[in-house]
Image (cartoon, rainbow, N blue to C red; front, side, top):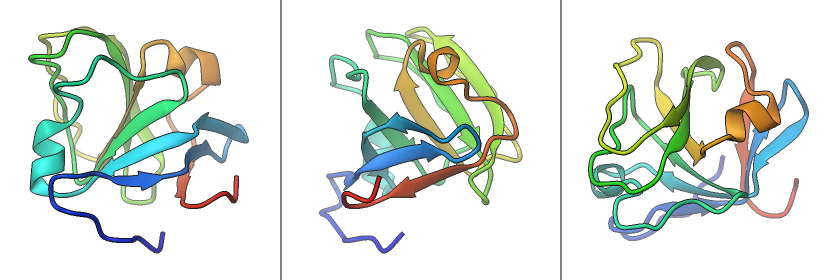
Length: 132
């Protein structure tokens, strides 16, 4: 990924999260939360994720939904962007356990894991621009 830098308060936009194992575009509009402030804020203050949206948080080993008003699906990725754990339908006011092998987390609309066939072991990639 050849990233462009944004202000510390804004997450960087990416064009897509790809499950290379299933050849599926999991989300066409991905924001990358990779600064202290963007990771701290996460999805707080939003009304939810549209069907084609996601938030990729890195570094990250666990998440919480305290203060959120909607459930999400959570995909834990290792340093090679391989899925090491998934959590479906994480409801508001919950926290996941820390996943030791995870280095980042992809937050998706509830139901996305089942809909797209994401499974432990799948390989992910993130792209910028219109290459997908």
